[in-house]
Amino acid sequence: MTTAVVVVSHSKALADGVKELALQMARSNTSVWAVGGTDDGGIGTSAVAIHDALVDALAAANEAVVLMDLGSAHLNTVMAIEMLDEDLRRRVSMADAPLVEGAVLAVVSAASGDNAQEVRARAEEAREMRKLIYGGINA
Amino acid sequence: MVVAADMRRFVERFAELIEQNADTLTELDAAIGDADHGINMRRGVRAVLERLGDEPTPGAVLKTVATTLISKVGGASGPLYGTAFLRASAAAGSKESLDDADLAALFSAALEGLRQRGGAQAEDKTMIDAFAPAVGAFETALAQGHPRKDALQAARSAAYAGSDATIDLVARKGRASYLGERSRGHRDPGSFSTALLFDAAASTLSGDGP
Ligand SMILES: [Mg+2]
Image (cartoon, rainbow over all chains, first blue to last red; front, side, top):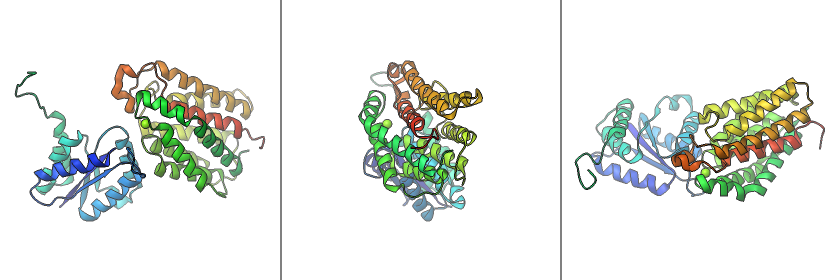
């Protein structure tokens, strides 16, 4: 059982950077796909580009978990999933998590061989992750 | 009756209104969003005009618009307008001409698609705030026995009024919702492009020919 992680951002640079950061934490070679920007290279998300990344990810892994940044990244991901053939669509799920922390948790989980449900659950733990609980200047 | 040629004129008029108002749409989006609505919509309608051809039915015209907008318009507008046109296309089916009831069903299907896709409610400061009143006004006018031409005018007025009303609202959906209270005092850009859509419909779908 392998799970691919798909990072969707408005910015290609951000998607690539999140992928790079997350892969640093993963011991084995996990499938991470970064997709960002509009069809003409601007800032935005494209249902068609996300769809194509999902097709690639599902060719490499049994399942795929998608993490998204702001607003329309979610809308276009839903659209992209609906555009998939039925047999592929059943193998994709979305994680409701902050992008950076969620992607790191998801990739670590996927690298350890977790299935999509587990990867998604781990990614969503990012919602509870705190940064300032150890004290410091504004504690 | 509305045939494929009428539907193409509607789309062409919408494209024309988007071209004329692209800078305004982008400025509205710059105030409370990411400053791309006019740019995105213009790219979308230009691609639509390139692809529009000899579709045999109104539904086929709407389908061409839907698939083009989905692939060419970035941001939330692509999937939202794309879904609206796709549902409208499905409602029109393969009929060669549409009567008043068909047109009402088409508008209503488009609105339902928008609601499902975006998950927005009334007064969330989105395109729904123009679209829903327009569809409601069209249905009410027809039910009161007004001719389609007048019903379309009522829809157009309701869409513009609905867009005006977004100015005082606080955004609860979309990029502007990140601004919270600071989104008040600005018109929602999607509501304005929606008003342009019903403006285009009012001048092209009345059924009395070009
Ligand atoms: Mg925008």
